[in-house]
Image 1 (cartoon, rainbow, N blue to C red):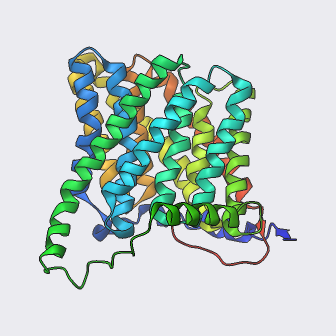
Image 2 (image 1 turned 120 degrees about the vertical axis):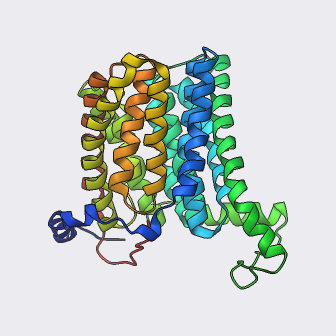
Length: 375
């Protein structure tokens, strides 16, 4: 039986003493080309929705494109399969959005559904970083879909727009991946091109999938323990936000999921960056929302700048990524008719709650074991 320890407090204190890390922006990690490309992937469906008086549909497509763009960027860093990573994220998000819209009408059902999706997002870390980052988007889409309960027919339409937005990002990611693939095929990138894995029949693939999942069920492995922590943190954050009467309680659960990592130090860094970046992003969003007096077009331009900058700095600085992302979300809510000032404060409180719960959950871990520092 594994023993658990809270010796990670010293690591937490060390992270609290290093605020200069927040200002570090490695120029080599900035991705302006991909930032613009995936920024277009979010803004185009949003602008089309506004132009056709279907802003709600455009928003759902943009919400599908937003995390798919992050998955595509991470997929590129992990092995040049950005389009495949975005595609996997998009399909799972569409299914999750459909289920979330239905479960939102049944609070008793919603909590176990959140726990299940969070657990799945944790258990798939046993496969690869690309699969893990794609699967993490699934419970996030589920939580965002709980804002507006829908009957099955309307939930299916919403899921369709989420899927369309995600697939649009996957298509854009393939535009950058194509030159590299052509170079590898012509022999110009032979040394850099990764070796292709051997072909697997569907039966072998399914057996491998089931076997890997079964091996990590329970708390015997690091992936299994992380999955349990993910599920518990998401449920506690959701229930705590509901008990406190916070609007959009899913923000707390969503924050807990994106902050909590299998490594404690990374969790602390993510938590501090997420909370601090959200606070600064709220101010940014309110300032940009002042352009609403000039019409929808200036708001869309401000949103385009914010989301493009978020993607550009994503691999370089998570604090700045969160800042620009929060500014974009505040503008998005303002476009939907929700006051930027009111929703900004609610988002900050939800982020603070979810980040705190993730930090607490991260302190419950094995006293000994291999640590993974990949983010």
